[in-house]
Figure 1: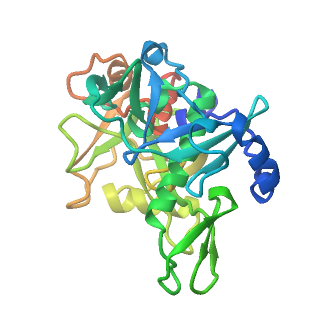
Figure 2 (figure 1 turned 180 degrees about the horizontal axis):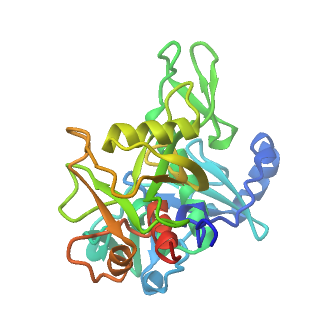
Amino acid sequence: MRPFELGEIPALSRSTVDRQEMLRAAPQRLTARWPDARIVVVDRWGRTPVRRTEVDSGAAPVSTRKAAEFAGEPPAEASFLGEWEGVDHWMLPVDPPAGSGTIELDGGWGVRQQVPVSADEVWLDLRGHGALLDDTSAGLLTTAEALRNWHHRGQFCARCGSAVRRVQFGWASHCTGCDREEYPRTDPAVICLVHDDIGVNGANVLLARQPVWPPKRYSVLAGFVEAGESLEGCVEREIREEVGVEVADARYLGSQPWPFPRSIMLGFAARTVSGATLTPADGEIEEARWFSRADVRAAINGEHDELMLPGNTSIASVMLRSWAAVEQ
């Protein structure tokens, strides 16, 4: 029996687009191809239009726009996302659709969410509905949302406080006061599936819920990597701090960008003693429990009365489905 591995690529790690990093310093090339480029439009809540008839397909493409409809050349607020099938793709912030109606969709964790409908399109956000997109669209929107969040939160220089302007077609900012240049940041965070030491893959998994979550909503544990800390050290510290358990054999599973606003989730698995006593951190963890593989399988199928798992957009969902699919 081998240790379990991720059985699929996390939803927001999917991408087919060539990011074409070198073109960010090639204004003539990008400007010349702008009229034939496609635009991923994103509103202030990170929503983008998807054709309504394709939402239920599980592989819906984002409804991109023609660049020529916006301007004759790239606007200052446009960000270059890369090239796909010979076509340049950009992100452009837009106002949300005016006078639109709404429909109700599952926004993850079983929570129903009202989303705008405009003409034959529905406007979806990445966090709640990223798993509904096709591979190309998931990659485009993940990058677009990461850049949108970075520009929204970084409008002033961290050194002197002056306003910054966008350069390199959205991939850097230049301070108008001290000439400092800055690039999009990513904050590493670990997310760990802890199972017991029965067999290779354990018979039970440790799940917890935060105080702000509704009852029955549980997930694996996660936390940000601190300065000067290794990823494995962060796994051990976070589990100890949040539920009072010592873990061993931490091993890397995979990663997923999580641009809310600028994280990357680094997935791990670790082992602890079967039946270890759980001591939830006061104010941080509302409850922590051991669940069997049968419990998790039932929850995946929507057949468990006391357990609701993360939505499919999160790497936590992939980790739990992958663990539940193997034997101990």
